[in-house]
Length: 83
Image (cartoon, one colour):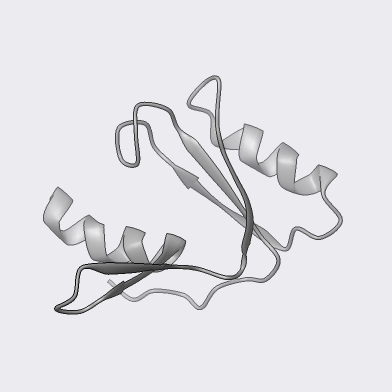
């Protein structure tokens, strides 16, 4: 799957891109977003386990939203995206 195909799915996981406007509306379920020292999804799982508010997390690989891997902690489980 190419990067062009991944961008809409990633945008939906971290927020919403308003079609035709280029406007980004953050996903309200994300209550914490932080960079990771190492690109390891297990760090996201551990961070979510430490937060009682955390219902799910999204791991974002390095160089997708910046040079560092990202961890987005959520207070609910987002709907599943179909590919």
